[in-house]
Amino acid sequence: MAVATIRDVAQAAGVSLSSVSRALNGGKHVSARIARDVAAAADRLGYQPDFTARSLRTRTSGMVGCLVSDIANPLNATIVRAAEACLRDAGYLLVVASTANDPTRERTAAIEFRGRRLDGLLVAPGSNANAKTWRDLGAAGTAIVILDRDPLEDDDDNRWPAVLVDHRAGAKAATRYLTGLGHRRIALLTADAEMRPSRERIAGFREVFAEAGIDPAGAQLCLQSSPMDFAHSDALALLRRDDRPTAVIALGTRILAGVLRAARDIGLSVPGDLSVLSVGDTDLAAVHTPAITALRWSLEDVGRAAAELLLQRLRGDIGRAQYRALLPVDLVLRDSCASPKTN
Image (cartoon, rainbow, N blue to C red; front, side, top):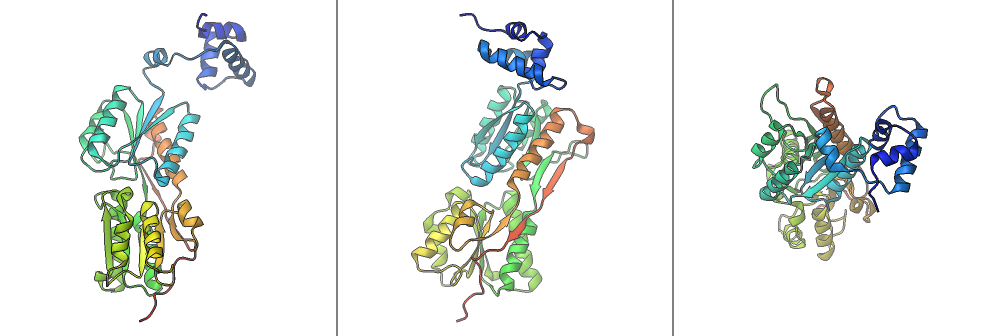
């Protein structure tokens, strides 16, 4: 059976080749009737677009890559889902790879994306180890937007677009809330300080202790190379210390789950014995009993803003394009925090 071509679709729909092309590619100035007739004809004939031919003709692939540390992380998944929806509406297919914050995996994925001539990239680098890789891709014409990591800065004429979250302000709000309740031993459990989100949280956390004149020894930092590496045993060790924290600010993924499980296992009640605050308003934070007070920022806005910044560059809208989007963080009060017990 012969493979249906775009000419067959045009003939079956009774329209021109250019009308079929615009209809199938989501172009403007296509009437609802023509779009409907073309879609029906293509479906009836079993027509499949030749993406390789289109790529050679337009010098674009119609695909965008996305690199995150772990797509299973609900924070990343929500961002990617929002970006994918925005890019899909604009006619692009999003291809996602997880790097586990491994520079080698990150570099390999970037090279694979380049080899497939992807039009742009949304990137959350695990470190600065691959800065040269990103610069080389940018120099080769790949549009790149950084996702909540340190933007690469070359000079005033080559600023790298980035979507950032105000983690410092969020950490300050959380720490002020807990110190206001009377806590003086607070643990911050977050990822490696080499990455911007953790570094900003640590800075805000320490600033509150300094501003309030509280003994900085009470600001206990527990850093992980990856949030997904945090184990139940790590939380048990923290909560069994003689100077154990009376409050914990924990990244709301596996770290939060580990803290809550460890507290339960050694008989600490939340919030009676231990106040718990989540960084990121995940499903666990919302459905746990008691519900967990959380720092919330719109993950959907991060994904949409990143997609929009990228689309501006893919459309050549550089003159009107933004270079930075800084998104706010809110403190959502629930039932997991209380004043510490007095001895």
